[in-house]
Image (cartoon, rainbow, N blue to C red; front, side, top):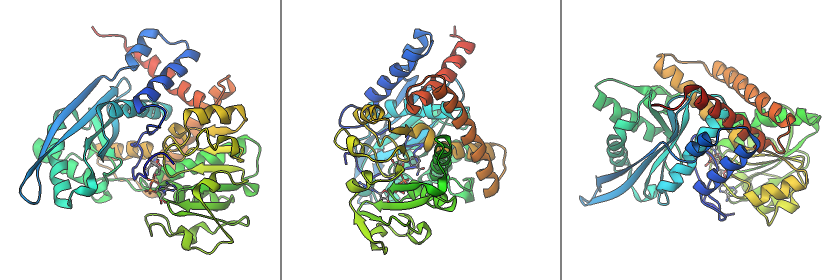
Length: 433
Ligand code: NAD
């Protein structure tokens, strides 16, 4: 497995993580050009989308607990805002770079566009190991970073969210720092906040819920009965556990689940409610009763109908793509399938539903959170679930239509939907001056 475990809300950790093969920016640019080839898009618009609108690099000095001063570098990349304010995660990770932020901001543009949200793509972060900071140091870093990027964020400009190394508490500090400087409480400046300061109900479950909805639709599309469908889920965290439990409730047979320590396999089905998720009790999957234990590599090659990689990026590679037995893969994690694996799976006729559609429930409920904040409303969990279902079905229908219209893969179809919408908006707005 090539990349590190992450905790992120993936809006956010939009979407594909860099692989060993190429950087996030190289992959984003390659996928842009690949998608543009099939479509009749003005080359000038494609060239515009090949670059970020702007990238802000800031210096973030903080006082450590021992009184010394440490200086970090932070970034906020804005890719495209033709449809609305920029939107995307803020990550704290030692390997955050300018180019990584730009590449990931491009994916946020596609993810928002495939969902038809009135947002464009952004990404940012600070090059720091968050584990090396105390809570007080992390708070000081967050407040100072917010101050440094204050002029380029805001509820109508750019709305950050949690990502790797940041969490709802970090977002509460961003909101507070921003609000104190603006002399008013402005919850809509960030999403993924704790509900008590304007966070939305259902935000945490949303990416897993969207993975389950899309899996259910794909199962039906291919004429299967969900009750006769065996599913393996890699990663039993926020995305994996929520997806597995919903599919279980809808009648699917969840036969294997795993966490970073390994997995369990029961061909008769696992009671997903009795297996604690990463949040409920980290790394407890192997402690559950099950007839068989499997490694994470073995789980990917089990004889199942549906495989949901929902842990980390780059787990399906040229090494194992030939051995995957599932007919359908739904990408719960961001970028679980390398580009070589994508080609091999396509040649073998294995269907892959891409991350930018499947786990986009996260950014969609972030959009609901922003709507609630700017309208000073609070939606019930039921309403969030209903609205998410509607948005996911509408995105699924758009992507399905594109697939039926000749896109060779579901990924191509999703990119085509996203890129056409953005190009059409650029065309309508024109170039100023
Ligand atoms: P999480 O931390 O809640 O859970 C991750 C799970 O994966 C844990 O069970 C962990 O033990 C397991 N894991 C970690 N490393 C592993 C490995 N090497 N092999 C197998 N299992 C491993 O994380 P999450 O929020 O569920 O995110 C999972 C993936 O989904 C990431 O790629 C993330 O970027 C993406 N994503 C998350 C969200 C979100 O809002 N949570 C949204 C969209 C996409």
